[in-house]
Length: 156
Image (cartoon, rainbow, N blue to C red; front, side, top):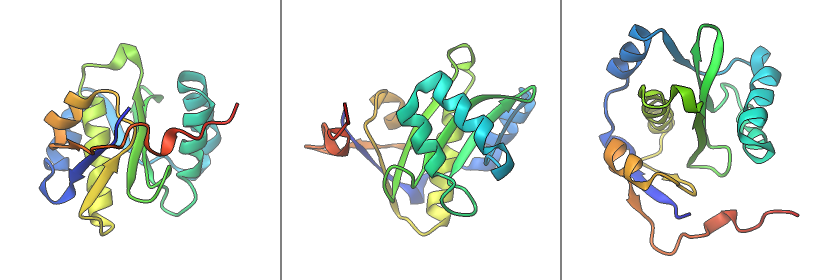
């Protein structure tokens, strides 16, 4: 899966996106330190050990470099940035039954907005699956020669 590049100085506005989620009863916010173990376990259960490891490393700094989506006090989605590598977005996931509500879009915009606020002008979206989603949502473009990129060093 290839990587993509996105301009962080030309993102959709975050506040209206957060409000749309709130109207649906969905909260988008960083995961707090005291929630770390529950959240890491949730990511591992739903997405596997590799993504759980990347979520866990998002707590390497304060504030943590992640966002979660919550509905009725349950995690329904997550995103991390500056975890796999500096200036990288991902991984990210939304429970299948919650897809189509815009949660992934808001997790993406929230993460990229925070990266821009932290001084980045561009970000890399690593090992993308839904290329069209990233192109449409944030104007991301494919990086030539980036497949398999940094993800070709898995352990057995």
